[in-house]
Length: 280
Image 1 (cartoon, rainbow, N blue to C red):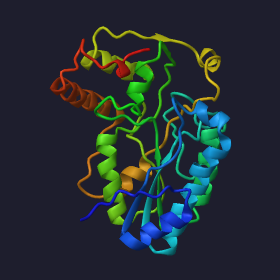
Image 2: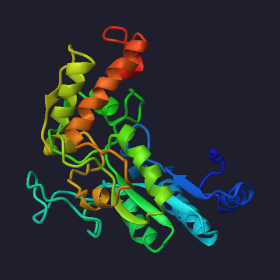
Image 3: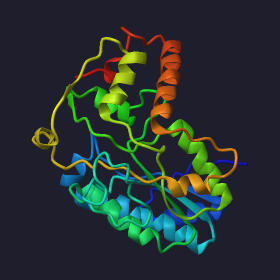
Image 4: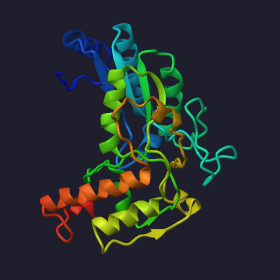
């Protein structure tokens, strides 16, 4: 098996087409997109640029791979829902794959909600709803790295994606030829507090945080944030044989155990953490 790292910008249709014709891949893994820096609030002030990548670019890849009979895995988002009367907070009733997006309080999520409906038209596309991705390091896009820098966090249970377990699963799903929408999170929910308690337990015992309400959070951000639970029944039923996916609380605990080992090898724990991983 050969792996090629794409160089074409997805909003440049001709360049993407040229690259596909030169490489002739059997599968494409599409994770490109704009979330903004430092967060999705950026999209509120840069709507044309957000559309250019998240809508036009994504459709370019889906359409061009479809024309060529290439399987395309799109790492999308599950941040297109919010708890509602049919899916109450704490009920254990998650949004299923056929649910229509009900969250458009950020422009980023709004564009992603549009995209999912259009991507469903492409029978070659596997659309994976990723949420709040967590990795075994403190990479700046890691959900843990982001919220560890906040003085205050909201304490709401959410579906989340532990990448160490889920990324290999996505490769197995692509190899199996699965298509359509899948809620791509570890089963169950975990709260922000529970995540940061694991951070304190394994990574930094001196770390402290405070909670604030969603209403208080809204005063310091431009765009709303999605909070929801996704139903993983379909994902687990269709998962290829041999793939192990733990529930989110187990997966997070194991993730932080690995993170501790990784950071200790770098000599970063607990007092020598690089400045970019600390609160500003």
